[in-house]
Length: 142
Image (cartoon, rainbow, N blue to C red):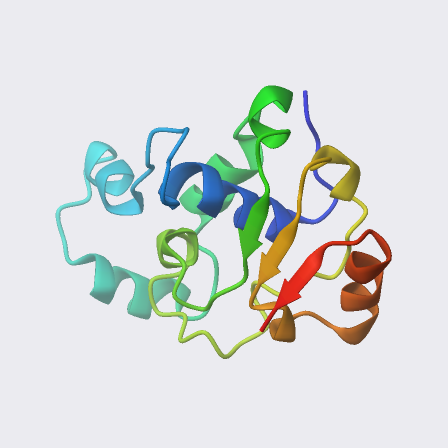
């Protein structure tokens, strides 16, 4: 089982594999998951009333438990760090892209992405993380 140290880096990988231009995984929907659990209200209100600016537990559990096969990880050449990513909406519908909920703090998982060539939105990463990426000849696109 592939284990990520940094949950937020895993989310960036999931964005590419599940919601990117050429998805390799079936998209997951927080709203559909809640409906299957009997929820019939408004997702926006539910999020605002219960988990404003927090990752909703069902999303956290799903994405943490999601197995990402090595063959899919080796196919990743690009990651994007963008406040408008679908995976962030599925985790925290009210997130405005400004908080620190999805900041990557560690790149200890880079060995899982041996063919990573580009990072979009690199300006959102801490300077020491950009240094690590540059040292691996990964192109940083701002």
